[in-house]
Length: 149
Image (cartoon, rainbow, N blue to C red; front, top):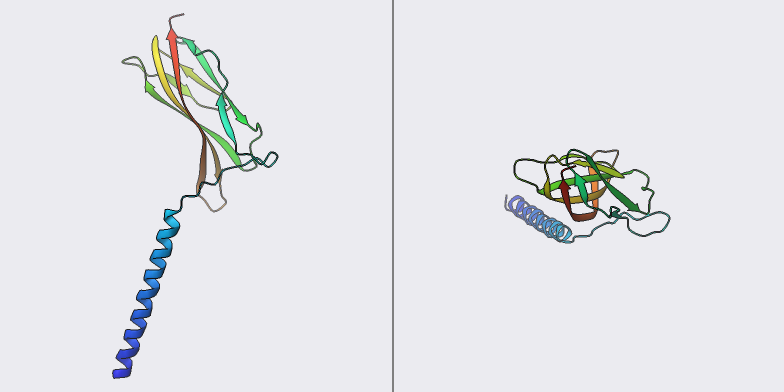
């Protein structure tokens, strides 16, 4: 009987030690933040995006096209570009219509005034097992002035 209790105690101690070791290892892995960048297979440089527009004036009720570029121009195999445009400021009582896309996104202001947007570009990939990986490659603020035609 004494041997059986001693074996249970030894097994319990080993299990507890293993659990503590696993917990510490997992904590260390979670605290390491490694950002894996998507790099071009041709240039071996990380991808970047930029806004090509020089003029940020729009006419009310007419589409304004935001032109985006990707450097390098060709997306890596298995990736797509995701464009998110958030309205940060707009004239009271109205929000612009936004249709995102790459390389052009369409914004239509319904009222004259100053607008401020957050424009984000990410590269997205999806594995065959599910889940999506996204890497933000641009996050810029855009100010646009809409006037009556």
